[in-house]
Image (cartoon, rainbow, N blue to C red; front, side, top):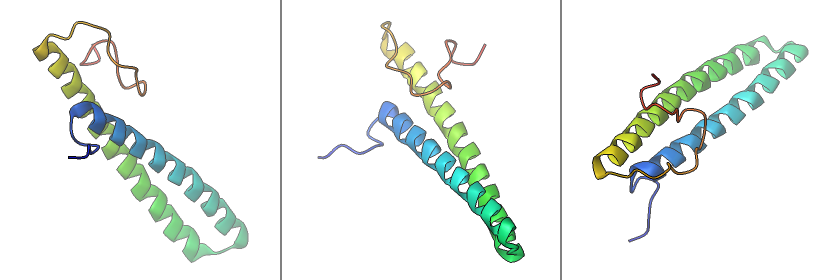
Length: 102
């Protein structure tokens, strides 16, 4: 059976991290589109793009929260199975030394 992004916690964490980056890029592009529409005086388009930007911001926040939950689950799994070795390469700064940010 082929491997999917959700076969284990590690690959799910990597996948969600990639989604967060894609949403950030989309937000940057929409920000540029808002500026362009404002310069053109397209008020209705500006309003629609601002709504898109807000929705993307919310999506990014939810994905970041999901990524943190997956990170916590990874650390708990390591504790439960007794993996004492170094953690895999960090995907981002959301993988603190202490699993609960203490």
